[in-house]
Image (cartoon, rainbow, N blue to C red):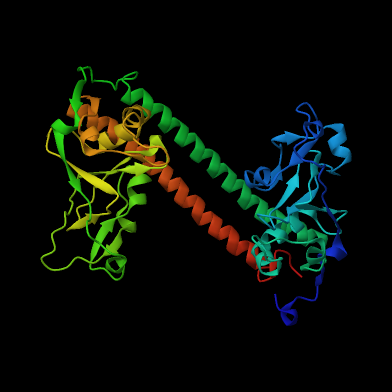
Amino acid sequence: MDALTTPLNWQRVRLGDIAEIKRGASPRPIENPKWFCANSNVGWVRISDISKNSRFLYKTVQKLSKKGIEKSRLVKQNSLIMSMCATIGKPIITKIDTCIHDGFVVFENPKIDLNYLYYFLCYIEKEWLESGQQGSQVNLNVDLIKNKEVFYPKDLNEQIAIANILSDVDHYLYSLDALILKKESIKKALSFELLSQRKRLKGFNQAWQKVKLGDIGITISGLVGKTKQDFINGNAKYITFLNVLNNVIIDTSILENVKIYPNEKQNSFKKYDLFFNTSSETPKEVGMCAVLLDDIDQVFLNSFCFGFRIFDKAVDGLFLSYLINSEIGRKAFENLAQGSTRYNLSKSGFNNVCLILPPLNEQIAIANILSDLDSEIISLKNKKRQFENIKKALNHDLMSAKIRVLKK
């Protein structure tokens, strides 16, 4: 907000002028167990505690003993604190009595509405990176925080109104988070029930059959002989490693470019092909699967994955992708992972994997149910991102007085 455009009924001051800003303290040596007590009613805030929360802090992983409290700074519930080391400038309102170490400050006795101050600190959170002390990581100090400029409407009712609007958006985002979590839990449980035969869909009662992957399809290698230069301004599309690792269905909106030369021999892929990663840092993520369901003319694959083309007409690719990525499939592939620091999957091991499959019509029915749930989850996540952007823009416009909420 430019000083020339600041409304007359708004005020500019330093943060230190509207609150007593005090740094936390840490008992030393911090490793000593005498400072901690699991049965204490007083928390001990770590950066991981505020990273897991949004506006309010309801609990902490650790709690301080009476001796620990004496060596730290006690913060009463309904206080505003902010991180000043590591993840800097992250504010949160405490809903419990807790202590803060020297990586936090507390804003005591604020002269403006507490919730407005919280949202203002959210508004300027990224600015701290520019003003912090540089080192291996950016840190703040109390003087920097005290001297930071804050602007706010003089009318307390307008402060409250601004905070309430942003709070309403937050509540909607929380409800979306809860709904996403619920849908993901339903999908996880239903996926296990359907893919393990614990639950059979109505009208399906035929026996499932064991198949070996090497008997239902063939493996196809990804790109070979490519240099970094080939991935600049390419003339063809390829599927990235993360596209395979993170999806059940290949996301064709994030394909990347690769240069394919005339008469160059590279394997290309088509609709219904499956893709697998050949290595990972953990055994559980070896052989993750994604299927291509879009009809694309000539698409290629990164060199750290391989493709699998099903020739057995009794196998549905989408069902197989869900099955292989499920808990059942993970157990089958985890046993094949070879290595110590990085785990690899051999094609011979892959071809010998055995899975139990239902008849084709039941495969398709199960895959459709799980795909519909995925579509709902994706839609909710997109809506959440949309409202996060709305909140960001709204926060800016309200805190800069571009939007006024009370008539003057």
